[in-house]
Each structure stands twice: as C-alpha cells, then as structure tokens.
Image (tube, rainbow, N blue to C red; front, side):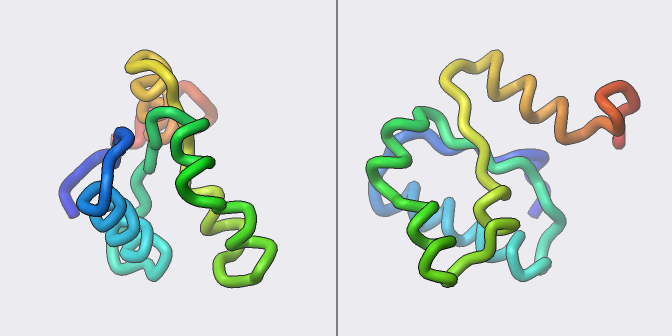
Length: 93
C-alpha cells in the first residue's frame, strides 16, 4: 500500500469493502500502519458498532484505535500530519 492515509467518506458496500480491506491489512501487519480517518462520526457509528466488536472480543481495543474521525478537511489534515510527527514537532518522513 503506497497511501499515506485512508480517508473514507459515507458510502455503501464498495466503501466498506475498501475500508475493511485496509483495516485488515494494517491489523495483520501485512502493510505499514497509516492513519484511517472516517468522515462523519455519527454516520459511521450508526453504521458500524466498533465498540460492540471490542466488547464481544472479536477485535482488540488496539484495533479499534486504528480508526479516527474528522468532520472537516482541516481536522483530517491535522490528524494526518499528527500521525507523521514525533512528539508533535519532528516529521517522520
């Protein structure tokens, strides 16, 4: 995977397919960890109950922590930049 981040907007089966494929590859360490940002927290929490997956033991809390949310492009950009810095000030790239 060459992407620096995955940003998913509300969508249907194709969007979910791409999202879960990326999460699975990151979870199993087949690809390096990249930020996974979902636009519209209310939409995604209504669609997928990630907390229930943790409670049922089918994913770990660390897997749940792979996902972040943004409501604006500025928030998403900040999350991406933040994930590529050390202590908030030194770029990793």
